[in-house]
Length: 417
Image 1 (cartoon, one colour):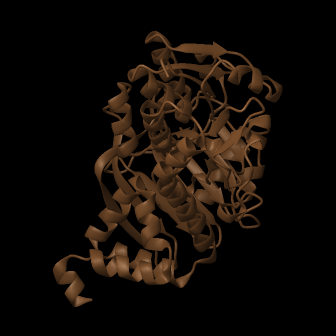
Image 2 (cartoon, rainbow, N blue to C red):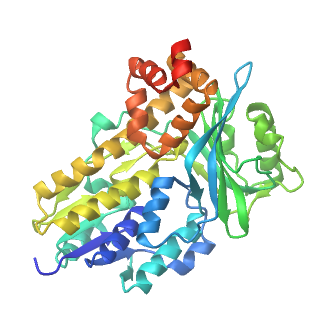
Image 3 (cartoon, rainbow, N blue to C red):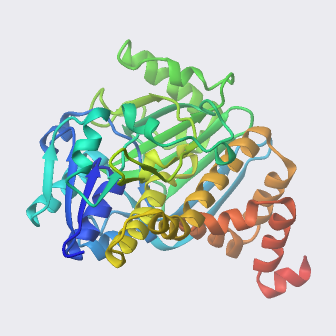
């Protein structure tokens, strides 16, 4: 094939990383998206995303590591049992979070600056066949509207038919950072979880609060109470719930300053149904459309895996595109084999934690107790957020959890155990 042409629908992390990689390797691409980069600043918060070190390294490889100084260095953990458990796990390399209303338009502009074909247009399902006629391969990177329906649901990897958490997600000011810049993961048994992420937004560093509320529990009201209806009432409610369930966060809040960081668009409420779909579909003209990113696999944000596995999968797909001249089922088999351990590892581990955190299963509570008492285990567990397949190697069975702890204890501690 003299010159490959790849059409990419969607300008999220998956589509942008794919396009930038292919651009770097001389493969012609077109990105189709429904909004220009200039509109992002005035949009509602898209999500709250941490890019782990492995993703930051991929950004460096692509030449788009524009925020090298905004990293964080580990995870604090707080478990609100009758005698609260608190500990810290260090990351081998810093991770980072940037407001996607800054991140995505910056990468879109960089792709265009390097000569990329970025087309701002709304695509409907009926347009796909005509678009695909102009490309050797079509990659769909958005699950919006009809695009999610293109790829069949995989029940074996999708045990849920509805959201498992009622989410309240926002960017906030007035929360003092802990001594070490880090994510904090809070667990309130029977009520929910919260992830506090130091995040670069328009006016500097702010705190993202990803509040994962158990449906039917004390915290679910946070997903249903609207900030716009009465900002003061919402903030007072949130402060009361933080004091009750996540006190080590509440004690760092300046209540006079505490508010949404940039204004009323800095909050999202709703839910995510974890789903895995088929990796490709054959179009009526005989060409293939490959699923990438959220349209292929979407996870609950409780462990921060979505964008990271999407970036990983984009690189694996891009590598196969560069190596191959024929885009058929065998090509897709290579792609699937290259990405599935990471994608399914992230999916299964996240689904496991959703279920076992809510149930408070003894195996998980024992695991948390063990790593809280051993710094090496806490550090390894934290660093392995980069590698969800390694986390699933640990959590796939009770026997594996026990074996992971025993095999990774330092020598003296292992003998003592």
